[in-house]
Each structure stands twice: as structure tokens, then as C-alpha cells.
Amino acid sequence: MRAAIRQTVQDVLELEAEETRDDADFHADYDCDSVRKLDLIVALEKRFGVVYLPAEAEEMRTIDDAVRLTLAHAGGR
Image 1: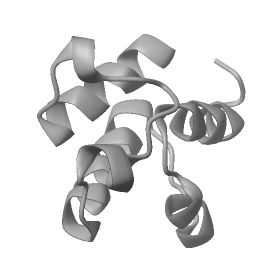
Image 2: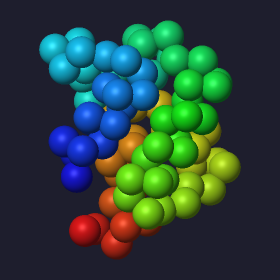
Image 3: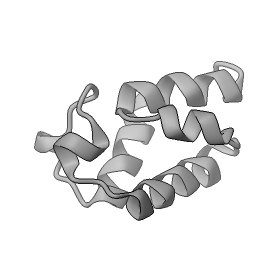
Image 4: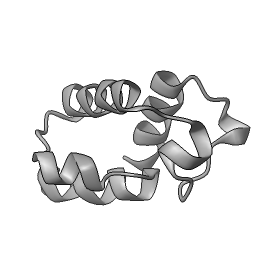
């Protein structure tokens, strides 16, 4: 799942694989504004069939966060 989330982040934020780190902050490190973050949240929800609560979407700042929150909603699949 981590690789799929990383790929989704790369696609939405238009990043190359070599510049993507699991602990990098979407806003600070990738200059991700609120619109692009919303695009990312929606892409992750569609890809994994989950729905994040607004507080969780706000909390999601890194790939590590996205993995943790997605696994919690997907039941660890």
C-alpha cells in the first residue's frame, strides 16, 4: 500500500520518484497548497475506497501520515 500511496502523491503533486520522501511535508517540502492537497485527498479516497474525516485530512502532511490513516480506514489491507 505504501508504494501505491507514494505513486499517488507523485502523480498528484507532479513529483519525480527520486525527490519523494515518506517523511517530507507536503506543504513545506513540496509547496503543496490547499487545492492540491484536496486533490490528493480525493485521489487517495478514490484509489483506496476510504473516506477521511476533515480532521484527518488536515492531519495528513506526509506520505507516512497518509499510509497510517489509509491503513486505519482500510482495515489494514
